[in-house]
Image 1 (tube, helix red, strand yellow):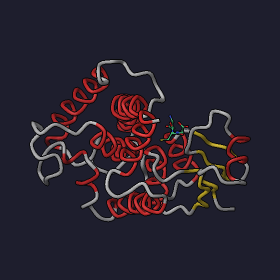
Image 2 (spheres, protein in one colour):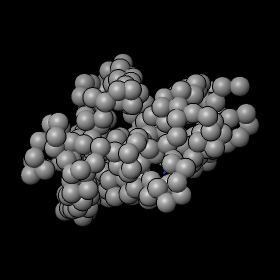
Image 3 (cartoon, helix red, strand yellow):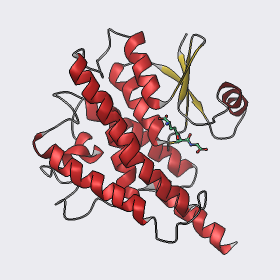
Length: 243
Ligand SMILES: N[C@@H](CCC(=O)N[C@@H](CS)C(=O)NCC(=O)O)C(=O)O
């Protein structure tokens, strides 16, 4: 039975997990969480926490993007490895996966939630979260100087986490100019961004496909071109302040 993948294409965590599906060539049955039935009720019953992505594989329920990738790795051992066999390298991959979730995606999420009024305004323009992002950007700029991938010599779970995290972070709080040309080939931060990854085949192809699908759905739902999720948030927050 095909794996049911509960998702929304704007979600960075969905993109993270989806990248692993594409990398591994594992088919899935996309269940779009857009408020429509029966998916909305199915998802509410499955996961009261109400965060996506989640999957159901032959009755097995798996949550968290990292949990899903770990599950796919164990369930389909013959597919492309995203967690190295070497235990020390695997520990490093898992560590950097946490880095991108906790120190890039997390502060980025706080800024967006403040912008759309989902979390209280700190009255400082989100300075603490911007500072955390700047620290992460600087750290990655140094780390990526002589690297292609987040860890080791091949694409891994850590890269699945890094690509959407940095893409959304750059839209939310742009990677500063002092890190040279963020999206130019050869810049060290560029090596850690999806713009760089999207130029790499075949891995980039998978990632670009995730994003192209997201962009198409964004246009269909009227969110506009470009940084569709952020523009959606800004529009929502404008509507809130004008109402
Ligand atoms: N820690 C979770 C985070 C999942 C998460 O926060 N997903 C967001 C979308 S990127 C979500 O479900 N948002 C729905 C909401 O906030 O109501 C993971 O790694 O999968």
